[in-house]
Length: 195
Image (cartoon, rainbow, N blue to C red):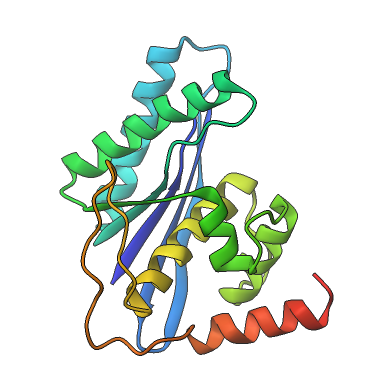
């Protein structure tokens, strides 16, 4: 199974592509779609849409994972993320890819064991879990890969996956409970290092 994780935004959109099989998780691509901050919003959103279409055509993911909309102290940031998220949902729908949505705290808890993990901790855990030779280039890519890891864990553990709009899929049958061995090993190593 191939999963794309998308970290939405209106200037930088992270993406991460994972291959999931019996041996575990493997990063096959990742990066950031970047638009000039000085460009008008409509042009940035169009650039993001075209960039995501290109990624979808190249990698043909089986599923997409994106952040749910959340409201923190900065409502303007939430609006901007929502605009970028809308483009991500449109791009995946056009490609015929089912979309699953996860709260940022759930993604952090799934990858780091802590729903309030700092961005640097997410980056280190993504690097460790996926056995990457170096950390993802940007926080956007790291967050997108974390999103894909979270979805892969939900599938493997037989947990209901979250669909945008509040719907949930039924739990997958026949999956063994527990984390995949490479996730467990990475969590164990991070605990030993005091992360």
